[in-house]
Image (tube, rainbow, N blue to C red; front, side, top):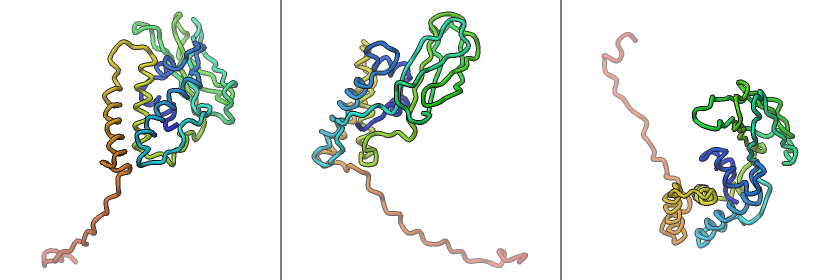
Length: 227
């Protein structure tokens, strides 16, 4: 697969990614759903570039290096605890967490992560939760995670794959509105097809830097005053 969940989380909120991937409703993104979406997008990229590039096999399933989840925060709570023991992290992952309030009128609650290990972490809240409907959205990423075959996948392939995944995630969320990623996705499909036909290069070639002559200057008498 040519994209990671971490790259997708740079584009959309944690709650949106979870909404698209949590089919069983347990508050954690389903690994099989993520694999299906990422593989579908990666296969499309590989197929369009097949005439000019032998990309790594995008169908190899791996456990996502990033785990995404959300859990309710109890009324009156001043701390939340997240259990990561089921995900098999072998070292403390990089963690991000934020408290989502039930509506715009509700008070903001800020969370501070502490006591993080491979098995879980705690979040201290800036104040006691004033009511129901608050959620803690989080994601944890294994150290030094990257897309499979990262070093062998050209930038253009990874960039296109990222947009294709975002388009598919929007579709999975069942939003009735126009998909905001479709225009970019179509632009990338056109570009990939042009590359596949040899009309554009797969990799941008480096332009040679021209030799720049050393500056010269004719010193006049005024330049030498005071020497």
